[in-house]
Length: 223
Image 1 (cartoon, one colour):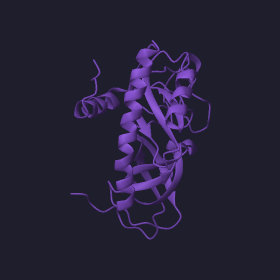
Image 2: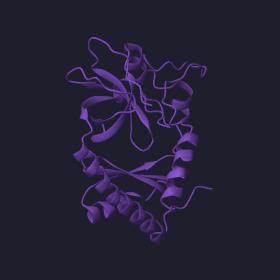
Image 3: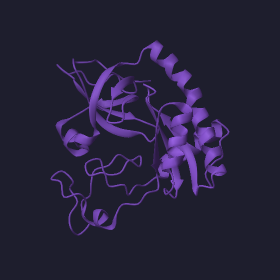
Image 4: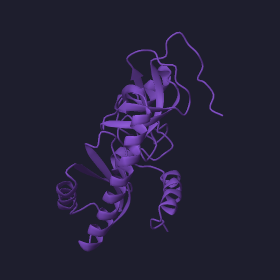
């Protein structure tokens, strides 16, 4: 049973999970909104218009820890029309996924396509993969021309640069010390450092979720 969020005089900001990787962000509504945990909402993120799931009201401390790069606008609750649109988009996501896999194999690219995240406004799609990220520009352009939308390739296995891994970004809210202590606050889903963009991540939770999805859609599971 989904319980109501704690009542306050004015709740404008919420912690919301969004995207295939379950990224976390602080999203602000123009007016107070009585939202429930797990309620689907339409967001304006740094990537574009997306669907997200409300977790809880956001505190000042959460906003500080997640950082400005994880902030955005909460536009509205998801409507029945939004749900119908998202169901239709799932077909296009599947087409992009299957085409990406086929063309990557055909072109002999040393990468494995894992998933596709089509933004709700259908302006762009993020093709998630693991493997070598060289010689992918022409691959992305070919997909863009075929599907008439912006394609961004996202390598989920890209390690953090050594210096960034050791010292963080030196921003005041990073929290990482020179001796490797502390560390940036991250969501637990493999999104990397939310304040400095460090990409050293633990992908076990993401891959576990992905394996279930691929089994449901009869995609090739991860080894």
